[in-house]
Length: 132
Image (cartoon, rainbow, N blue to C red; front, side, top):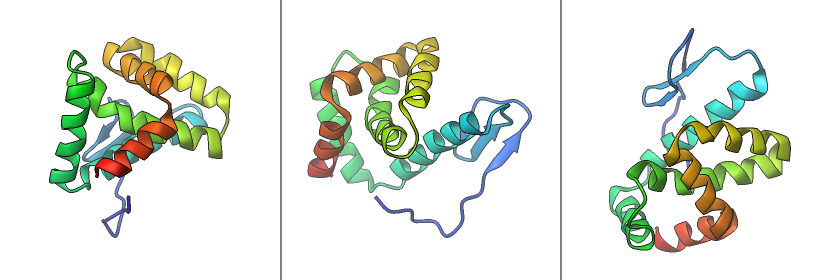
């Protein structure tokens, strides 16, 4: 996946639920947490830049493999696989674990991390590339 836009515009506000479009994050106490939130939203942005036909093939595959999972869960499987790879290769296991723990507030996020754990982030990325 390659970034298609020439610029990345990010709004930083006092309080909000982070968004990928328009890219918006809140002020965070720690820089690590801010980077992790920004990374998550940037991966969403990259997903939205994938050709619709290719993305729909991926979603069709996930719908057949996980028919009972929510759309929120399915939309975060690839995202979390990529994010886990970034955590482990560029940062550390503690940051990865913190993100997983913070995701417990939402069943969709929690379930997508479970899928990544069970299936393996490298296998998910490999399958995504094969399908798209």
